[in-house]
Image (cartoon, rainbow, N blue to C red; front, side, top):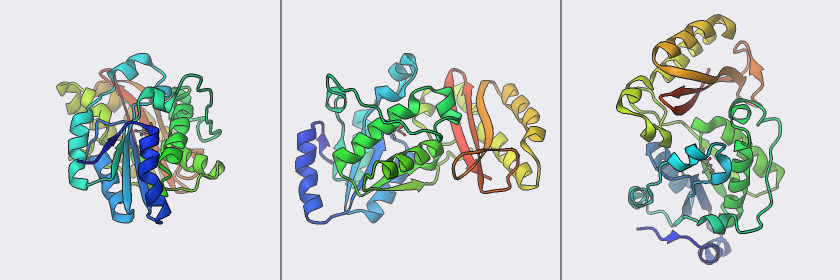
Length: 279
Ligand code: PAF
């Protein structure tokens, strides 16, 4: 079993000799409740790094709703077991006061990219993400970091943040891993009731249908009404966004004239599901 490290000094003690001997260190930042999506990131890291650190920290600063934070699944023991077969070098599980000691007063904020999508619907979310990820990058001194495209906006934000702050790390985006019925894997899927789980794949199904129409030359305003109606019929109670945006820079688009992605966030039985696909 990989060592579970809870203390910054111990982490430094482990990482320093790796760095001194020129080993390539990879980090896979997570909030735990690991699923095959996370494990695909660990496999990607193992393939190209000499040392791999998986981090597990449910970051309070990126939750804009206290109930959401309280309900977030915490499954450290089974997470550690799932990581066993990958033989990672460390599991970094900082306590809250290791990450944000008394007096902590710094926020990392990335502008522009965070004005839309989850940035617009979850105020403060990306400041929380950028702050904790900057700290994880510096604490682990990793050379490479692995993030899923499932959180595409997050991937763009942390890439920008690392470049802007001159943190010497290469941010790698890895493909979204899906259940057989198309539902994007997410720790939040654990919160779906059995009934909601049956309807959850409709989100991806609707998105695939829109993407196909867009590839055939349709424009968003033509295809949106039917898509929203289909989601409502399946029990989705609110759509935070269903938008086409440029893959690079996230500018809003009406048609897929440049490399673009379709983004959605919607609520099903009290659970917020997000997804995005290339068009
Ligand atoms: O994607 C996540 O699980 C989190 O946002 C991250 C990157 C671990 C930061 O807390």
